[in-house]
Amino acid sequence: MSGRIPREFIDELLVRVDIVDLIDSHVPLKKTGNNFVARCPFHTEKTPSFSVNRKKQFFHCFGCGASGNAISFLMDFSHLDFVEAIEDLAGFVGVDVPRESTEYQPKQKKDDLNSLYALMDQVAAFYTEQLRTGDEGKKAVEYLKNRGVSGDCAGDFMLGYAPNEWKSLTSRFNPKLLLEAGLLVSKEDGGQPYDRFRGRLMFPIRDKRARIIGFGGRVLDDSLPKYLNSPETPLFHKGKEVYGLYELLEKNPKPQRILIVEGYMDVIALAQFGIHYAVAALGTAASQAHLDLLFRFSSELVLCFDGDKAGREAAWRAMESAFSSLKDGRQIRIMLLPQNHDPDSLVREEGLDGFVGRMQTAETLSEYFFGHFSNELNLSEMEGRAQLVNKAKPYLNKLPESVFKEMMFARLKELSGWANLDVSENGTTLVAKQDRKIARNRPQDGGRLSSARVAIALLVQNPRLAELIEQREIDWSGLEFSGAALFKNILQMIADKNPANAAVLMECYRDTAEEKPIKALALLDSQVSDDKIEAVFCDSLDRLLTQARETALTGLLNKGKTAGLDAQEKELLRKMLTAKILVPNNRNL
Image (spheres, rainbow, N blue to C red):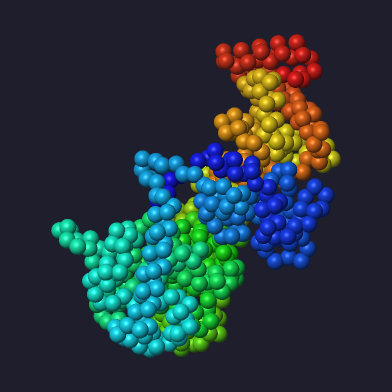
């Protein structure tokens, strides 16, 4: 495995890249005022609502809400994970990505990985050749014909055959690389390693960059195990990859939905019938990592399970992963097949239209979830409704804060009949939180932004302004105002990381609770010209501090008249009264 990418390099990369040049190389931009605009690449629209700001090094779509810096754009546009986006961005700038070696994650040289990828290509070509021309491959070809798989479809998925021999690979390829790639099995007694896959129909597993990272093999008789996958290797991590994703994206990089099935042959059989948007988890239940990966490419996932008891149990086990992945704008459906059918047999019996119709009318996650409990529990009895709350609430608490979470709790409240049911772990709803935020930040003077909002937004957009605050040596004791915690958090982050611009500061908050408000502040248009930024920031800060001190002073005086003050509060009051006498306007403190 490769080492970590140094944070300093990521920051430098964001300084070196111009987000306008980067995005314009993927989506043609047109300059409009201070911004560059285009039709959004992340949703269909007729009028451009996608805006890129060169000064902020930030993009935002006013239609779908997509936003972020250069790294975020590459992750969303090219369907990359974070490390892949850094590598692509470094390639765009023309620099190599350095790596840090750690005690627990030894550095894997890039050349070593390239050697493994090259080996996997060569082995796949060998397996393909054995399927086409080998004597043993004839029975695999016959099996595929009986399953209705055409030569073209077999070629699309690079199907092959592993000869039923112990050393078919070791006699042709580097044994050391074969071991590292998981293609050989070491003997416990120290004897010569042997081929992992023997006498099997072979399914190369490709990542979204078309690189072969592993293999799956299926026996052609009744031997066990029926399916065998590559082990964990530097290339292959089955908990993070799905079979058929590369082939799916080749047909349609932005499918309306993705169907998740259980086996390799299900994916291939459906593709044979024109359903090119199916993938399969690799011998394991669909994990949150699997679902988050697939949600990069489509907003709707359909989980398909056999209709027998094992299939229903598998569907329910998927709930934990599903609930953790559901954010606003995402949808999951549960498709339970009729008894004694798998996707292959059902699409052959009912045809393409019938199968697609079943998929389109499959139960939504909410319908399946509450329907499961309605069938399992007697909701006409108080005891049954109590069990419903106890069993359902832990799942709902896994949902990210969203309108969907609120609605799911509302449905639970309706079914349980419990009027006092809290709708979250702490009893506070997202809507209530948002309403309070809106109320706190609502302008009190005809629509003008609050001093706090202007000051914090300008600080996010221009991290250098933190120097002006340092020069003032402000005493923050007892000062509270709307956004105070976030303001202090941003100041501390700037002091710790010294970000060169807003894009670098925003990257410091990736995957944190503060990421969303930071993005909103970066987007805020304070309508301040460049030559007046410092003056407006200082004025907003002065107003903010004045209001905060007056509020704190009033609070201490009132408390002193009623409950009394402790020693610390008396000292704070003394300082505030002294400052007010020395500086009557209470400015520039």
